[in-house]
Image 1 (cartoon, helix red, strand yellow):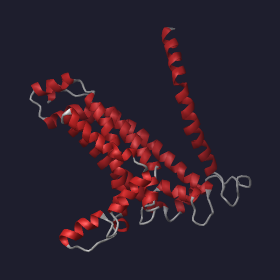
Image 2: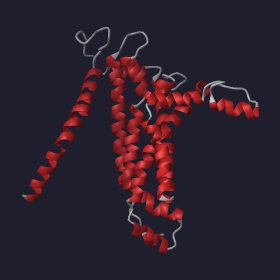
Image 3: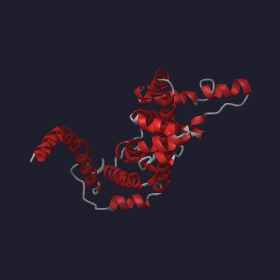
Length: 304
């Protein structure tokens, strides 16, 4: 009886969050899936639309840009997630936690500055760095000392710049989560490993990384969904040109920003519904992996 009472009290405390999730997540997702089964567009309006079933999904499968945009999305998400959001974020967290508290805090604060910068300003700063002479800083660095010819870096290396722009922001997020988790590791475990003669690399491999199981799951899941659905940096820098149109930006262009004024709400909603399905499947895969993978089992000091 006492346990049921505590559960009921906990449920009441969770009600505001549950209402927000239902209002701003589940209802929009259901509406998106519903719109994806119609031919709703700026031509039909919101009253003359017809139900077309899976016609929009068949259209996606037959569209010539589907494979190109899917591959671009896959490369964009995987490279940014692995090398920056997780890899670089974890590396910075380990390094800054190994430094003195004041020095490590300074570097974390400096790395976090772009997160409080408006996206438009942040992307324009990058575009100015890569611009042609005489404004581009990168071109000036190569031209003045080496006498090399200048180049507009964005059209030639647009995909690389998009990964760098998003990766820098994502790494700062991972750094904060991993730093907090590393600081929460019980010190007696670290002291025991030192007594057993474990090197710093061994402590990272056998103690720190296994203790980051749930923070790692959170960072990977959150950043994957964020990369799948966000496109503001790409839209500001290239607007999908130079083979940088990812799936979410494609959905936005079709539904809300069509150059010819024919907003295809049904087709754009179908593209968004595909993203929801992909994100859900990836979330399930992550949960399975982080639950059963032997690499993230509890550390065993006697094996060091």
